[in-house]
Length: 171
Ligand SMILES: Cc1cc2nc3c(=O)[nH]c(=O)nc-3n(C[C@H](O)[C@H](O)[C@H](O)COP(=O)(O)O)c2cc1C
Image 1: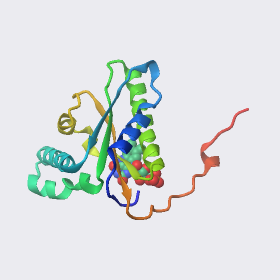
Image 2: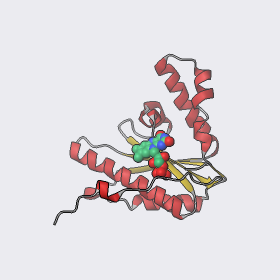
Image 3: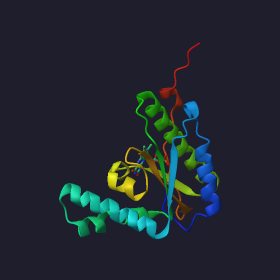
């Protein structure tokens, strides 16, 4: 994704979430949860994450906030895609797959609406403190943090996909 800025309207946010909710979902277990962060909520997210990291690694909180705390400010909208987890291993795996499909749907919707968007993860999405800040359950899994905004520079060119290398056709 090139650099993004500008804003994302509420109307477009709702369209992206609706696209996410069309993700295939085995047994209709309805595992998806979305949290949208705008404005100061992005700064608070960065602060919560950086503070938790500083405590975990025994490093200075202020230094960590200066280094990592600003990262969520790179886009006007961060859409967190999460799923609830199940005690049943197969169900949990399939629900997580729904989360990945939902994230891809969000990306496709964002691009169709003319925005730039990127799926990010990093240690942040596995942080209990971040889950709590977002109002998620301790057992929920965050699948991705989708950074969305208006493209303010051209997209970097991506390598061609070599279909032959990845596809086996059996007859
Ligand atoms: C689960 C997952 C997590 C990712 N996390 C990050 C991330 O934290 N930071 C990042 O720069 N790219 C991350 N990516 C990769 C980008 O989403 C993207 O695929 C990559 O930058 C290539 O860009 P393109 O698909 O537009 O060519 C992640 C991708 C996936 C599937």
